[in-house]
Amino acid sequence: MRGRGTPLKVITTAADVNDVTQTFDLVNGIPPVTERPGRQRRRPDSLLGDKGCDSNRHREELRKRRILPVISRKGAPNIKGLGKIRYVMEQTIALLHQFERLAVRWERRTELHDTFVSLACGLICWRRLKKHRS
Image (cartoon, rainbow, N blue to C red; front, side, top):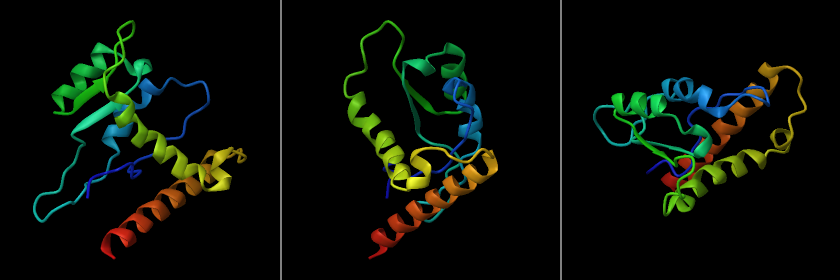
């Protein structure tokens, strides 16, 4: 079973923080993923990002980690077919927004919000595993 938008790691930041600053924390925080018998994967095959994540430093660092950066460059035409791939990410956000408490952040304390996000991610993963096994 491929990822299909299953949330593996979520980071909460302030509203005005640029997403690219969290790239390596997000990649480093992904837990081991077991698909088949044998060695567990520690990193994704590729990382999808929009033009806001365009940075040569980040591209080089991802390549060092053997992760393919799929990131549009600023001022260049969009990557053909990227919308089809990006849909997976948008689907994940939509899945999280099914939990009404996460659609709009009401909690002032970050740890409360993070707890609800973790619980929602756990429920999403559990539902997918349950569906996959039946």
